[in-house]
Amino acid sequence: MITVDITADLNAEDETGYVWTFLDEARDPALIVPGALVIAGDEDAPAVAVVIDLVPHPNGTIVHLDVLPGAIDNYLALARRVTATA
Image 1 (cartoon, rainbow, N blue to C red):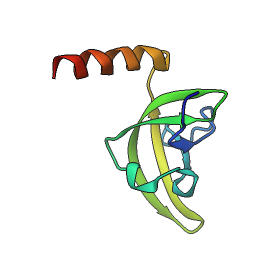
Image 2 (image 1 turned 60 degrees about the vertical axis):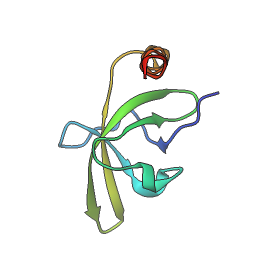
Image 3 (image 1 turned 135 degrees about the vertical axis):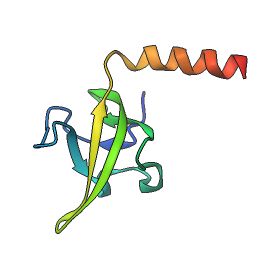
Image 4 (image 1 turned 90 degrees about the vertical axis):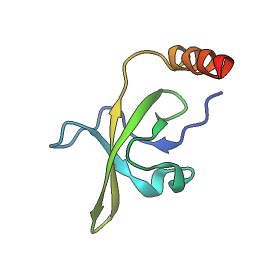
């Protein structure tokens, strides 16, 4: 089972062209900083994403995410290779 860092509807793009969600949807808001790689979506449809920015809004802080292509397993394999050589 994959733990999602921030819950998001991966089909919900705003005028920026990025997926958006609110920061209060994060499991640990401290992880959600511009440039961070996170697991976004939900347990049924998780994906790797890059945090683009955090934008103040009257209803809370909006997080823009750039969802990366491919399966999470592809990124896990990369992480294992990097860890093995470090």
